Amino acid sequence: MNSVNNSITKDTFALTTPLYYVNGLPHIGSAYTTMAADAIARWQRLAGREVLLLTGTDEHGQKIQRTAEENGVEPQAHCDRISATFKELWEKLNIQYDRFSRTTAPNHEKIVQEFLGRVWEKGDIYLDQQQGWYCVACEEFKEERELLEDGCCPIHTNRKAEWRDEQNYFFRLSAYQEKLEKFYQENPDFIQPVSRRNEVLNFVKGGLQDFSISRVNLDWGIPIPENPEHTIYVWFDALLGYITPLLEEGEEVTLANALKKWYPYSLHLIGKDILRFHAIYWVAMLMSADLPLPKQVFGHGFLTKDGQKMGKSLGNTLDPVELLEKYDSDAVRYYFLKAIEFGKDGDFNETRFVNTLNADLANDLGNLLNRSLGMLKKYCKGSLDDGLTISEDNPIKKIGETLCDRTSNAYNKYQFHQACEEIMELVRACNKYIDESAPWALHKQGESQKVQEILYTVLESVRLSGLLLVPIIPNISSKIYQQLGFNYDFNNKNLTINSEALKDHFSWGTLSLNKDLNRAVPIFAKLEIGDSN
Ligand code: MSP
Image (cartoon, rainbow, N blue to C red; front, side, top):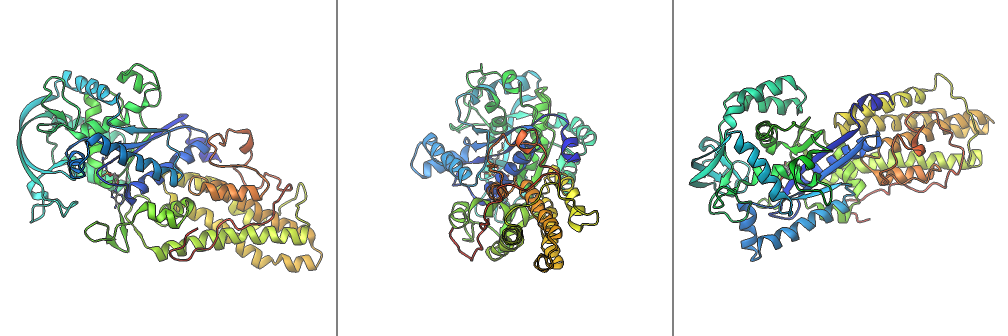
């Protein structure tokens, strides 16, 4: 458990997902970021830190205003409806968020205006003419050279960018070029993974241009106090959505109060398409306002379906709600976090989904628990002796004793697939160990000590695997623990390394497993394609 303990340099860990646009129902991309954020939050909590996970919805701007108009409803009513569907999805995905930010929340306007005031006083805001191509779907101006031949931006190939020629307020981003470069140099881990860091460094090296932070002829947004015909650019407003909900209930609405406890963030978890906003614009905005900077921005990859980019026009979107109607939350979480290397692009394919879950959770892990509890009942009357000695050359002991450190390292780097792989390696080794040591034969030969050693070794490995899988599949972990005689529910946030209940649980071979070993029940039923469970 050393690396868990060593990784605790500060005892709080605050992280965010992006605030999702409410122009449509939640899609699998939003679900992916949120699952990963939840796994990180659960890991940090389990490792003893006080954690705050913020998620939420981004509700202002032209895109939302237009969607509401198209649906014939007031923008606020539209936002309320869609925002609620995100909360419902997080419930289904078993996401334990602590704050839900909505950029239309009552306190937010005041925080945005106070922040803008600080940047204004710094002399970083000025009025100028903005001419250029605006992609409403991205809510971003694009360089002409970035657009495709038909005038669409490469991310939204069915929406033409629109020409704008208007007076806007600008933020003096160019003034932060050197400061930013120095910051990235002094904080080499700030942007993760490394490929994204290089992308940002190259972009910054190319020269930063000021960007406009206001829009005219747009009602759905926060007005600029000095000139209310202008509303604040949706991104400027949204990034501050990471701050407003840090205020405690009833506290006076000031930036200072909001920043008191949890700020600065340990991590902003985002997809690669919104890297510039977080790693460049947001950092410069905070520098301008003289506020501390987040510790890290991690840009994950994009998901495809059956090898193809997902899109409504292609008719191949993957609806997270439909997926969760067919398969339960642990199954969905396991696939996305185990089968895709976090940081890289990844694919969803239903056959691969079913095969991965059946192989790892039903066959390797589930059967291991089931068969060893079955043998315990048959050969040892359902209980293990106290104080068993495990021989030094036991092959499982060697892997088991280092598992926690290896898994911690992976989680601390947000490499969920690697954490799962380390755990599954132990699980597979246990299956092999049983096959090779043949406890059924040893039992016949009257070698009851050896049988006890084998079964303890395996059950202890399943226990530790279950514990280390809590961030990914908390419900299955609870089922495993319950069968091993611990009546724990790992959705309980108080179960951490610092709790009495889990005190000795983070190492291999230190616990006795001699009580209430419940009857074996499958922890994960085998799936068929299109299954409903
Ligand atoms: N509203 C902004 C974020 C403001 S944060 C202050 C926004 N919202 S979004 O709803 O469009 O996107 C949210 C997240 O979904 C982004 O992190 C994006 O990368 C992610 N994804 C969108 N499509 C995706 C995939 N196909 N695959 C994986 N994630 C993708 O941007």
